[in-house]
Each structure stands twice: as C-alpha cells, then as structure tokens.
Length: 139
Image 1 (spheres, rainbow, N blue to C red):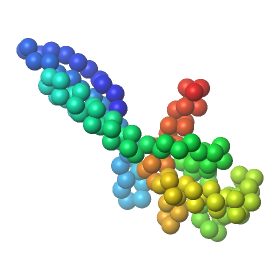
Image 2: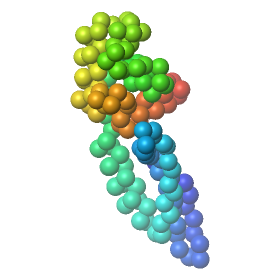
Image 3: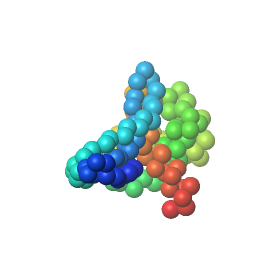
Image 4: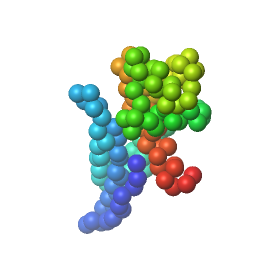
C-alpha cells in the first residue's frame, strides 16, 4: 500500500492510495492493484483501516533459514511437497525426511502452505515476496 497523490481541484482536496493484493482463482494466484481516490482526509481513515487489516494477516513469527528456503523454493516452483516427492525434496534441502515433515507441519500450522493441496497459501506467497524484497534491498 502506498499513498500516490494529493491534490486540490476546485477547492476540494483529493488523495489517492494504491493497494496491491493477491487474488486466487482457478488454481493460480494473481497480483492485482487498485487505486482508491477520496475527498478530504478520508484517505487517512482508509489507510489506517487497511494497514490494520494488512498487519492482522502478516506473519509475526520469525521462521528458520530452512523454512525460509522452503517457502522461497515453493514460490519459485523449485520444490514439490507432494508425498511421493518427499525424499527428493529432503535431499535438495539436505534434511532427513522426518525433519522436512516437521518443517512442512509448522508452515502448514502458520497458514503459509496447504499440505492437503500441496501449494503455497496467500500468506505464504506474501511472505515469499517480502523475503525477496528484503534480500534485494539488502535488509
């Protein structure tokens, strides 16, 4: 979310924010963007409410480096978490199968992955994008 523009037109102040979000449909996830334009200081109220909602769906727990790799690899399409692929996934991550299962269970409990459907959830995609941005910015 970011504030895009503030301006005055015919004596009325206008503001705009851009909101990017994930939308799921037919087995895929898209990043969509919406721009909201309001009069006066309504944008501050909307911004506060949207930030509160965003923080409610943000992972507070710090994941292990291994779990970060699992989420990142799944996001990149480089890790299959199907039961038949467990041995090769464990080998790719240099883990024992039982250890990998424990990581999968933890990520599933946090709502980052869906073990039943063998995919990242919206929260996991959002987390992977944040990890990517953090690594690019060096933070």
